[in-house]
Image (cartoon, rainbow, N blue to C red; front, top):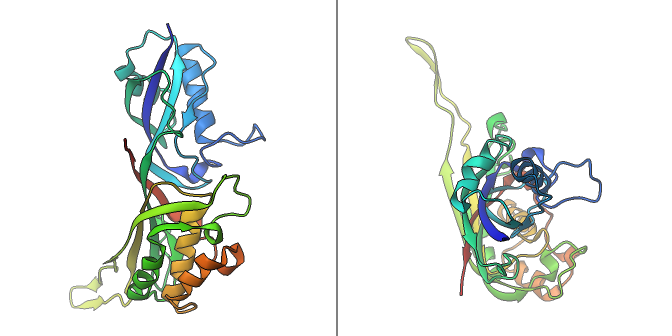
Length: 269
């Protein structure tokens, strides 16, 4: 008897060429690594179906995959069993049985992405794989004002990679939040009576975007555009003109992949 199993997975995307399998088989992907672990575990030629095909270098706390198997392993035990076969930068957080016809890409969902920016005079080597770094001061109020134009249902053709194969570039953004927190370095004590105060006013800025669907590179282009606004290179009201133009060249740059996290994924009915 064939069972369809649903996995909730988390991964550090630093060492992977994205989630999806690539034409060049030598490229390491999250999907390919999962397939290999499942083959080792079950002896079957299993190919997972992923809910979100994250780009190279993008991280996830809760992506979803399904696969079909004749294995007698209880559905809720696949998580622990697979984690013994997977590298440490991929983990199955949960596993369970699902309906035979359930397809995660066809389901109605609300996804939440976070784009993290380290804004400081000097880069932080610890954050290099998990934040986009910029030394230009970013004005978060300007970024928030610009983000308002993106909320709602719009044609996001200006905010997606031209190579997208989507049938339509209309998508709905539910909300965009921009948070900042200080993460300056502590003072350094050289001797009992001599300290050096750190002057680096470092901040971590998080752009949190919730939507009902996203286009290829859409979140990273939104992030790159908001960074441009925060730097003062563009005015907030120009975001509306970018949407209306429906031209990729009118929006900002594509921000680096390392700052992007898929943080929440909810199926809606």
